[in-house]
Image 1: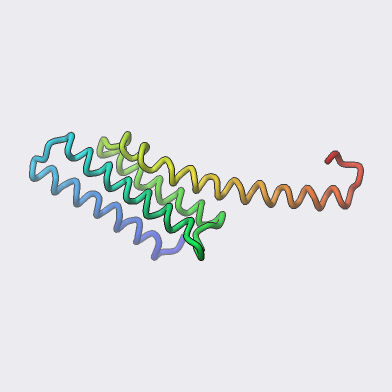
Image 2: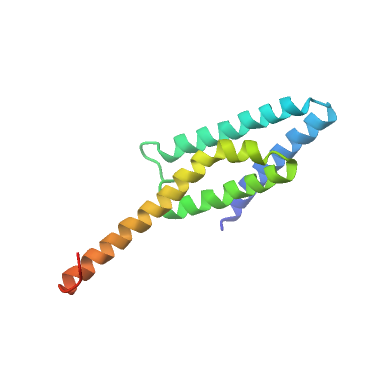
Length: 127
């Protein structure tokens, strides 16, 4: 994995940790903390989704789908350690589903393409 990309996700996790420690030091109500992180997770979901489906997006590839899944799992793991797993699962589920779809659709497309080539080579295969 690219070192720059690892640093970026580390920066995101560090920012989330810093925000959580600031809220804990300020003794913010737990319900408000959950709401704030729900908004942050929603923003991450929305921003990534918009970047993924943008007109000239380079993110809509199998490799980037797999990388995004790995990076989002790091955020999800952090949220689980903080007791925010429900908020993270709820708000990051959509982008994870999109990433899974991108990787699965491309796999399905290449599988179909290979099968079509095989049926052309071996006419006895069922279509």
